[in-house]
Image (cartoon, rainbow, N blue to C red; front, side, top):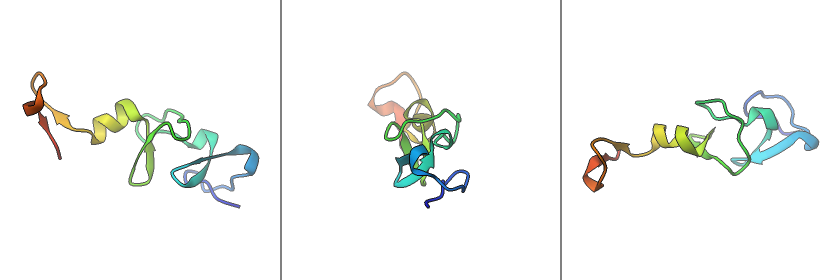
Length: 77
C-alpha cells in the first residue's frame, strides 16, 4: 500500500488522488501556503510540495516586480 506524503498513512484505492507522482488522500492534497484543497493536476509544485497556481505559487516563486509594469520593472531571482 502506498503512503500519503502528508500524513504518512496508507492510501486505499477508493480514496486516492494521484498528483506529483505520488498517491494522496483527497483532504491531504493542500497548498503548502494557504492550505486550500487542490485538484490533481490543477496546481504547481516546488521542491515536491504542492501550491495553488495563483496567488501562492506566483507570489512565492514568480518574478518579483516593482514600479508600474513594463519589461524593466521585473527582477528575476
